[in-house]
Length: 321
Image (cartoon, rainbow, N blue to C red; front, top):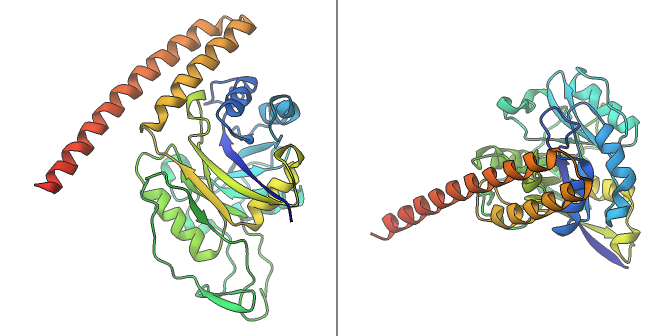
């Protein structure tokens, strides 16, 4: 059977979001330039930019997928594949049900990190069954797993294997669960919350996704998710529904780097060139301000990167002594 691998950044903010900065056209152009096959604009509580991005994505050789980062009563939730904003301030469970009813998938962003409105563990709807064992095919799988490697190294890793049925003939009560968990968020400065999210996803059998959570152009694609789409010969044949199904069913492969690290250098250079070219073509007054801001950010990231590199070298030398 034919298959194709696609790379997707499922958590990006545009200027339509209160904390975003970039127009969707520039984001799409940059995403295509750095080798992504899809980028989901997930602005806060609005789909204005996302719907437009999904409509014109094909012009950039990308798969168009709308989405939104909705504020629930218990924290943020990514609703991917929907072109409307779910009602705000509903419970997490009610919001997930709404997303499913409207044909989308529900993904937990930066879980457990309260400073960024991550959901608390107790508010995640999970079947009230013994999660120690799940049925996989004809065998069983223990889910009390150790954390085996989200150390921030950026090495690709397979995460999740879909949503297997529970032992004992299924669930006694239907529960609208999330479809995936963001196990790598590039904006997290340390690896603690990423590791915690990864352990949670493995324990409960949820596919994991990696995302940049980009608010500026240079962060787009700094983390991404690879998906294998069965039955397609080429990326051009892949639809939004194919991507949603691949995330929901797993397995997924996540890859990325936390900020700020050397991977940022290439992205800053490419982003600066793209931003300059975009504003030169559109002739907007924001161009000069955008380029200057990008230059300042580039200098800042260079200084931080050098400082971190020196610290790591000193730490390594201390181990050798």
